[in-house]
Figure 1 (cartoon, rainbow, N blue to C red):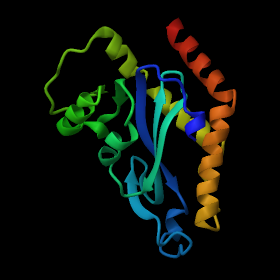
Figure 2: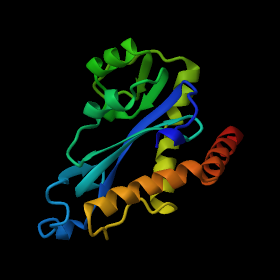
Figure 3: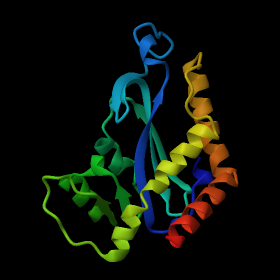
Figure 4: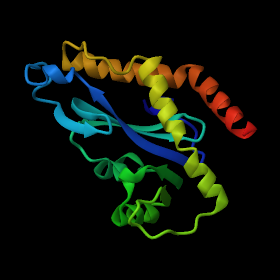
Amino acid sequence: MHYLKGEETGIYYIDSTKLAICHNKRISSNRVFNKFSKIGKSSYGWFLGFKLHLVINNKGELMSVKITKGNKSDLSVASVISKGLSGKLFGDKAYISKELFHQLLTNGLRLFTNLRKDMKTYLLDIEDKRLLNKRSLIESVFNVLKKHMHLEHTRHRSPLNFFVHIISSLASYSISKLNLYLISSYFSSNHLS
């Protein structure tokens, strides 16, 4: 995956998505992944499986990838997955942490997130606010990975098959022209409004 890494542009987006290995009804009877996977919670509810953590650049190219158990916090992975990057990193509210902010800042990466309701507001540069609002780009990348590259399905019969499938889906995304089409259509529709 190192050879398929995207261009370092200085503008990056970070997020994670669930990779369920079975339907919720079959969590108790799943034996293929019982040593590897954990029960986690996403915005859609509980699942048994793993989490795929991604960092992409503003062109939609994959910069860094990490697969963790389903119960792993996004905060605990953020500093590891963004190692070696410098510039601006945009994430969702799951990445709000003063400790993470200062740790990334010492490494040359400034973290931007939306505010929680109970947080004090702070001024953002107009350009940074615009880039923060384009965070849906990483959700579009997850959509392409899951719908077109068939990243998530629940028919794996061995852990090795599961990980090979994930790597092949990520590699096919990196070398395909779909990501260029996705980015160009996304930015052309947003510049018109």
